[in-house]
Length: 419
Ligand code: EPZ
Image 1 (cartoon, rainbow, N blue to C red):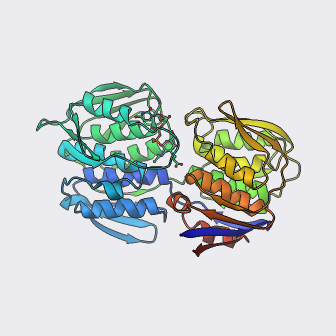
Image 2: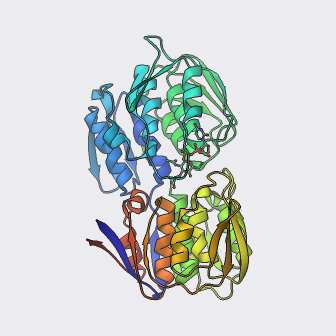
Image 3: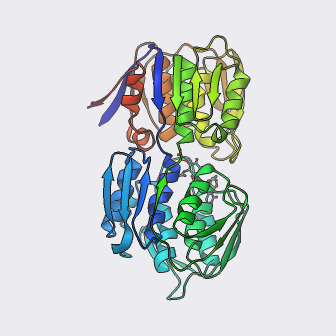
């Protein structure tokens, strides 16, 4: 089993460049199956979710050329084969293959999605949209089959009962080549949704309103190739900004779109974090006294649920008491017990996280319970006196490209060991 080992207490200094957005690229790659020509992506992060998706589309018959952060995908040979439960189960975003296979073949058989354990993660809103467009759902073992029995997908008017990033993107992908117009109401507004719409429109789709809560899609008959730059990963950016504020002495984080992080930056400013923000980077100074604050997550542009865990170690360096409430995933609290083992004064009471700071953290053996919990434990390990060993690091490597290299370059004593 591989572990991340950190000898903590060393301050971070220097420059780190944020990579392309995981939650965009995991939708862009399946969406490319809709195209009738080659599509090239630039700024693709080196994360295992990308490796898994590339493996799946190659099994389906796509030709893929990968060099550095560029991915050239030729989907012209793609076959509509049932996607095996195995690889599919390794990531939640595999549900985007339902949308793209439906969009291209009007039929899809895909293993039920996996992903981090954040509590129940239904896909009922995805299925409600696909059924509204004429697909019928049936189950075959660990797989689910969506099919229109020969009819093309029909445009539909869909109201999302819950704001859902995945359901919004998946519906947009399926609707791109459906007959007629699809309208998605109460759509999610995350930047990744705009990024997928931008790619599809540059392939010839007719999508309007991405980034607002009403998105309309006029179905088209075919989609041509294009070249697309993946947007920066706002969650990776926020994670490094939090690390820099917690234990940095001057860290420059580049490839950051401020407008994607406004609620997060506002929270840091409320704490008194001193940083300089320009149009595509943030410089974080060494911090003096910070004020403890409370955090409540909400759909974009609110405070991102994916950043409530990465900001937590920074909160523990402040002065005072605060609460963290995740309104998207109330069970996204498994990191709390792990941080308490490192000496954090943090508990889960009545559905909210309560902390009292400042805390002196001590290195300990801990385990990552999901991707962003893992990032929080890396930050805690960097801050702690002594050695921290983190297991289940596959979660972290799914979403943080080259994290060991990036942190080592900032002066951290961090490595991966094989046990
Ligand atoms: C995306 O997950 C992200 N993952 C998550 O990031 C992120 O936390 C989440 O959006 C935030 O909303 C990817 O983009 C691959 P949702 P997604 O559908 O699309 C409920 C990370 O750390 N819901 O927006 O799966 C759901 O239970 C990951 O990078 C339904 O009820 O999330 C949740 O409470 C973790 N029915 C809420 O909606 C559905 O059909 C928001 O989920 C779908 C979702």
